Length: 427
Image (cartoon, rainbow, N blue to C red):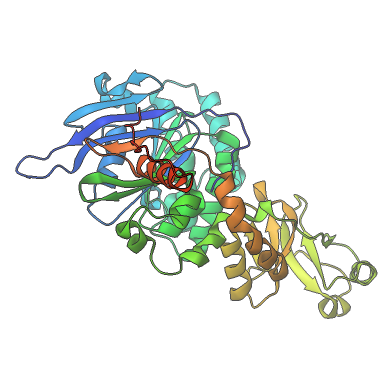
């Protein structure tokens, strides 16, 4: 689950009995959905294909017009607003970034600010600021074209473009679905890093429940017709799925998914001997031996790890050069323990280098640390989760209300109280 550290700049969103009925269809694509999305949170929409989660997402910025109900953003009913004006106030990210291939990276990011009449100097400064935010060097990337970028780099530019006009709301439609697993992990980590700084309200559609657990403050599990089956924290959904549908959607290995509940920055990292290119290898080797360490982490001028050298490798060198080791096991501090363990297994290593914002070196994590953290994760998870926001369809009592009623009934039974329990409709 994401951790918020900066000032909240996001907006609250309320879907108030929102319906989408397509002509010729008996059942609505979205049926009377009421959903409260807190400001500054990440809310994940998950569910099987065709369940209405993307339709719901697109109704927030009215790419799809709702048939009924209201959509309220920061107290304003946006269903009465001009659609183009609304969309300029909401960031939107799709697979592969949706970049215009004939425009440079800078031009892609500048689209909405230009529409809003920003001057050239302000736009140029904003482009560079956002490229730094998504960990792309402006001097290298601002004048490149999308075809010159990897899939992961294109997606980072897509996020930068969505944030260009500093919108309070960011909508993301399976943004990481078209990249390989390693790149996806890094993009997820980067999104969490960005969110820790900008504190937008992010609503994301995904088919990947693991991704929902990793990124979401809250997860909305939908069935056909955008029927909200459960809306709660990742911790409680894993520990107490509302029904068999949710259990089946979570799939096997729910216990293993608990690994995604703890982030790398939440555990104690180990220190490491560090060095920089140009140092004598013998000096670095002496520091390693004095510290009783097995490796030295080589950092560039911006404190970013570029290589890891063991004692044998150092003994064969005279000077530390600036070689970059692409195979070095590196994990972001916003990654989950599951990500860290995967990184170590792929690299056949008992430890991994940890980086923070701007890829700055933070420390080292090892398998022992992960195993110790797992032993504590489950108990802490339940205690850390707050009350879930409101979420229900017309005429339905949400899972949280039912769970609260059942818990109250059980408590009364234990106390031998005979009065019945009523589950009141939430606000």
